[in-house]
Amino acid sequence: MPHPATDTARVVTPGKVLDPSTLPVRFAAADSDYFAGHPLMVPVDGIAPEKLRDTYYEGRDGARRHLSQDIRAPRGTPVLAAVDGKILRMSQNTLGGITLYAVDPEGKYVFYYAHLDHYSDAVTVGLEVKQGEVLGYVGTTGNAPPDTPHLHFQTMRMAKGRRDWWNGTPIDVLPFMLIRGEQRQ
Ligand SMILES: [Zn+2]
Image (cartoon, rainbow, N blue to C red; front, side, top):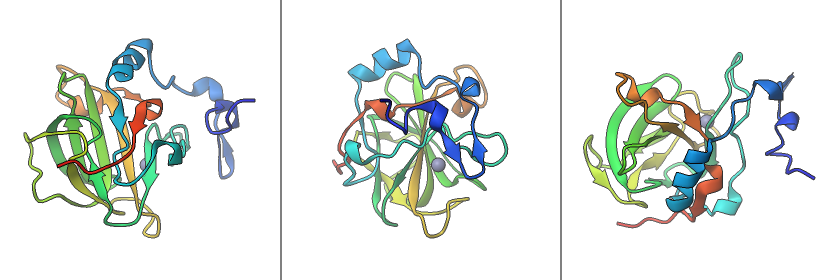
């Protein structure tokens, strides 16, 4: 029997059932090959991979789908770099609140961390970070419910050559988040 959270036919949001035929695939074979060799750390301190709840296909306002993973943790829990890489962008927007974008060492994937309470003092654009380094802290900035602090974590293929390189095609890395979140600095 399929796991309910990964059986797209069963994805239900309040008052709405998403049509599974419209759902984009989670990732392609090339993504899978890459991340099989580059396992991700759960980007929240103290969270083990088996504790993650799959929120990738959840519905959002209108026809939007989440295409991200939400990782719940108490406010102020350290948010960690999922992989080695570099900070590319730090910005604020209405949905994501306080956000940060990082890229992997090969420049293939962009990782988006949102709803941060605040950034780590050490973090600046251009900084190289190691997996497990503290980037910021879990919060509810943007459109996160005030009583549900969580990290909104999205992975996208780098949109090379585009001005909005941070807006690449989302993929799901849940199966590749295999390392327990643990500060390493
Ligand atoms: Zn989210």
